[in-house]
Image (cartoon, rainbow, N blue to C red; front, top):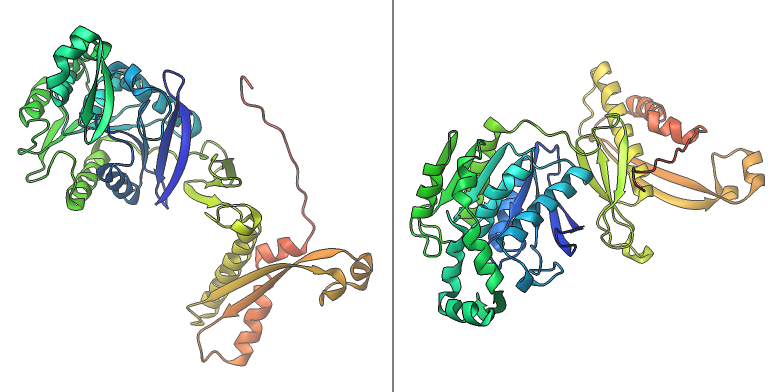
Length: 412
């Protein structure tokens, strides 16, 4: 899994901190994950579910709601409606930068939020809730002892999970006015409900109410002995594997970001993380590019010159394999290592005298090919000749034309 640290503007304008967990291979779909009340995107269960879904090919954007985790803004000014609006903003961000989410996943109050937000995210193909309340006002039981004070004084400081939060009267009014089940009845999307029968925070009856309000296709999966926060890794992994299998039935494959251009093309985009980190998108594949720490980078991926060396090494290995297969030779496994350095032209053994006289420095790629023992000398010599016919090798030796066009985004 590759995990990108991202930021985007929430509904109130606050900067929200996010993580995009990407598969190492093709992306089959994009999902948006809403965390539980006063939790964060980095809750163990949230991280485990996202990582497991990424391993199944589903990219997951998880983020901190306004005023929580590493996001900006004031928690006291938020409410259930603002959480729903933040979800819509997150979907807008995904749509613009990558691809719109086709799967919405919500844990606890986040589950209620995705049920409401689904109608405002048109690309939604499937909705998943985990331990979700059927009524947003259910969350007030967490600070029931302070309800009278909030009503009479307008706000109160409450302790939730060992942390202090200010709850305002407008929060109570907002959750009371929110009709989750009304949105469930109008959902008309495949719905998967996870709930534990021993959940002490949100009772199992909530799952029954959501299930009865929803239209088919709808599914319920019991989490047996799981607690509300899915603190056991096995429970989180079970949820993720079930979502991945279930989603295949309802969610069409989403083209990866970058596939809107030529499949053979490559798009490299700044992530905003560190000084040099970029996301490399090649068709349906995602990688990082960065610089070593000695050059001011974070060393989260190969450097630009490393990618050139990778291209030469991979092309050499593939070319040798194709040639050997045609000859019926068994040379596997082939291993190619490439080192890059800047050297003075006068020290170049293969350069022309004219090039040496020009002076300056040139790029030298030193290639080492490792074959299995026992290959006779005649075949080795033939393979060395073929290695120089690798298309990337020939490109690096020849003069290439590089053209550039400037594309300006609309509104820029």
